[in-house]
Structures are given as structure tokens and as C-alpha cells.
Image 1: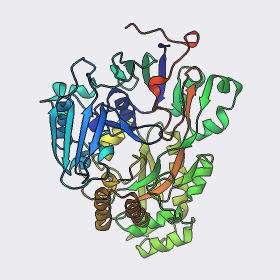
Image 2 (image 1 turned 180 degrees about the vertical axis):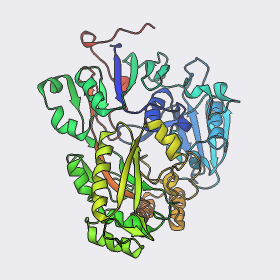
Image 3 (image 1 turned 135 degrees about the vertical axis):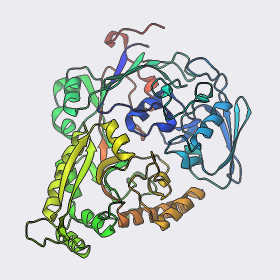
Image 4 (image 1 turned 90 degrees about the horizontal axis):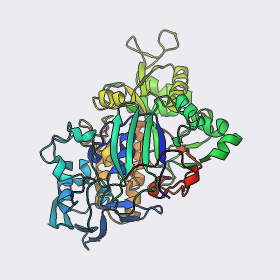
Length: 508
């Protein structure tokens, strides 16, 4: 049953193939196949063991004890032990390591390797997302001890414990993984996993039509109008389900214009989000009212999106001192027109079209927004990480736990961290901290409802929409299924019948 290769199309290249530094989706996709955490979610969103075969939570919630599976090994055959878990934690809290994930471990008092297979983790105070935090990929101490994790060559040649092993990376073109024959669950049935980097979605789609791509995400236009042909229906399977995340306009809040909440609220009023969904997404999405999609138990249904109202938006801008004083159709303040640049990433045709529609809607408001499109890795590391932007058009994929500490807590604005817009609200900080200390889900739900309402009011982002995920997979792959966490959770069980295999079998 084994053999063949899965060829995946991606518009963005990876940047750093280390779990604690993988901050973009392209890196995260690869890292998720090469490394394992102690725990993971199954297809029913239940927490189950990954590297850990069992775990216990003390009655007071302050101590977690994990028992690793027996005979775990890194892909270089070195045993994987509790010391590797302890080492991973030490690097997550090391201030010299530029990881955005450290906040999930700040309440840990101690991590002990009791023996080769037993890890005991003690917290100073209760931490509700604790189990999810230990889904972080464990990294190998024997290869990384003494290394500068920010610059190590390991970032481009990782060695993990996961179902696929790293083989090669041709920057901007290809990343190749191979099935790990010693994987503790079982060897993946597909021999190779190839990610082809094709920055332009139109070109990527042509490669799909030519049969050179097996798995990709479709644009709404492609899903609705360009894949409904006998050939595509025969050769591919399309899937559609709500993505667990949102697309947004993010403001650099150190800019005096966007530091004024009236400006951000005016933009929220001015933008017709349903028009974005109808015109660009072809109806394949829903309006976002804040950071939580409707599928999240933290979503507050009482928060409703405002109806698009250009006149109300103009009144707010006038209150903030922006008026069309010279009659040229542009709002001015002290002789300076309201003009800025929206940045987004190259290759994402949907975001480009959304940016253009937003540009037209803002022009009706009297605001001149230009658009700049930048290659993904450069965008992240030269502009996002260094806060060299005015407004960005981006999206977040969210974890299933509703903790938003890393995105919106005022302490998470450092280099490489996720609150790159610089949002700070003491009440939101307090609620995010309280949400982490509260285990009772109904009580946590009320906390995050308040967070939802405050963020909808403050508008550090203009929350635009929740797009549907639209993956397409070649029909020769069997056992592909859509679950609440997508289609990739059982990729090691995908297989291709021998008569349908297209690529040579890989030598053992």
C-alpha cells in the first residue's frame, strides 16, 4: 500500500523549520510533519497523547505529569527522552531565543525529568491552556544544546521525531520530506511529501490543472467557477469548511493617526464587509465580529457587525480632526491629506482583491490608501517583525483554546512577538490573565465574551471576515477526510493504490 508522493502547492516558502520559531503557516505546515508535541487534538477536538502515552493533572491543577511512549527515537536514531522535553521548555523561556510562544510557559515553576520517560511540570498558579501548550513540538537536546537557535543551521536542516523526515530545501522552489520508517504510530503510506513553492496563485492553479499539484487551497473563484469541469471532478476532490481564524486590517498603533480609536471605528463603519465576501469570496465566508469565529465556544453572539455607514464614519473622522477643507475629496488635518499604505503578501490573489476593494471603499470616505505587495518571507521579517508598516492585511489561524494572550496582551509587543500592532488595554490585559487562570469553562466563556466585546469596540484590527477553507486533493489519494481540524490530521493514513501511483517508490 505504500509508495507515491504527495505534491503540495504553496504560495509562500517556509522560513525557520524549528517549532518554537515557526511563526508563519508555511513553516508550521512542515514543522507539523517533522516534529511532535507531548499531546495533540484528534479529529473530534479531544486532547490525546502524541509523544506522551499518558498524563495526569493534579487536583489543584498545578502539576502535570507526562509519561512518554516507550522506545521513542529522533530521526537520527538517538533516543528521545524527558530531557528533550525539559530542554525544549528551557529554550521557550530563554530571553535570547526570539520565540513568540514564551508566554505559554511563564507560569511554569519547574520542569523535571524524573526518569527517561517521565516529565513533571509544576505551575506557580493555575494555567487553563496548559495541556494545549504542551502540543508544542519537542526539539532535540543532543543537536541543539549550545547552539544559537535564532541562527543555527538546524533551522534549514531539521531532525525531528515525526512521521516525515527532512530531505532537502531549495529556497523559493521546493521542500522535500520522506516517510519516517521508524515512526511510532506507523510509517506513512505515502513515500514523499513535496512542497512546491509557486508564489502566484494563478500559476499554481495552472499547475494543478496540468496534474502537477496534488494538494492545494483554491481561491473562491477557482472553487465556484473554474473547477466544475468533468476532468477536475474526475481527478480531484474538493472540500469546504469554515476556517478557524479570521482576516483583518491591522494598524500600527504607534502611528498617531491609528492610535486614535475614532479613526479605527470609522474604518469599521465605512467598510462593507459583506461586499468583500460577496464580491471576492463569492459568498464562501462570513463577516467577522471580532477574534472568535462562530465555531469557537468563546464567540459572543451579542456582538453584531455594524452596517456599512459612510456618513457615520465621516462624522467620527471629523471629530478626530479629519475634514475635507479644500474640497478635493480627500480628508485633511493641518494641511496633510489622510494617506497611507496597506501592505499584504505576494501570491495571495484574494488578499490583493480585498485590498483593492477596501481601497475603493476608503476613497469614497476621503481616505487615500495605496497598496504594496511584498514577498512573504520579506514581509514577515523585514516589515512585520520590525514594525515597518502603517496598515497590514493579514489573517490568523487560531488555536482551539480561546486564549489570545499572545495576540493582544500589552506585554507581547517585542521582536518576533505576535502583538506587532502594539495594542494595549489594561482591562483586556486583566481579562486575558484571568482567562488563563480559570479552569471552569462557563466562567472562562464569560471572560472571553468580554474580551470579544472590548476588541470589537477598540478595533485594534478591523475584523473583516472568516473565510471558508477550500482545499482540493487529487482523487488517487484514499482515506482523505474532512474533520473539525481540517483534512491533514490523518495524512499518514493516506494511500494510493499501486496501479494509480504516479511517482517511483522510494528506496528504503
